[in-house]
Length: 231
Image (tube, rainbow, N blue to C red; front, side, top):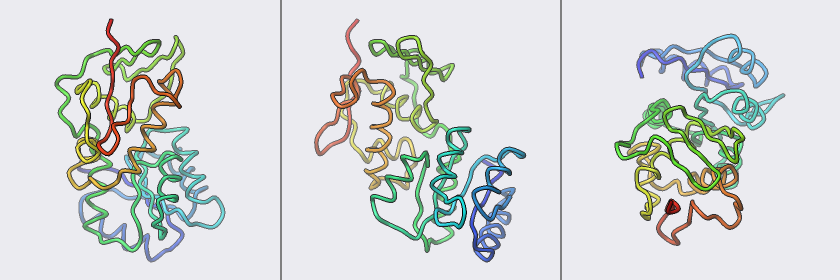
């Protein structure tokens, strides 16, 4: 995505400078913010295609900033953090992040993550139905609209992409690696916790009983399967 606008949010001036210089040299248009409050102001005032968000900042932290951004926008969010625990990653994804990169990182790695986050529809979905009905849940992929028992439910872009891939491959056990690479890109495959978070979120939104799913089923040691009820 050439000429994409990226907002760098980090309280370290040197990190902002290095990332800005690198991204501008790659053709991106770049804005910067020193903290969460300034980031929210910038996103309200300007159009950005992606946010690189440091998680450890004074004042409003990255996690809270991420939650607010996600409640207001579908903009891709990539979290940057010195912490590498699965708990931290899950919390960030739960807050609405699309990806999580651990500091220190190499610039080629960050650039690959940026390209993946900007890629809106990486997978081939020629077999996707226009409308998918799961009991009281109706998913209109063309209109990007979901209703559950007549009530509109908002899905994030990543949730839509995951559901679209399942809909194109119904009643098939899809391995973790295949699903990750289809939705996030070819550089992914080991980030099983990403899927766990997004599948749980989807279940909360489309399943009658999320703790006992009827449609998005777990295939132990393999991945997940979408069951479409027979009409």
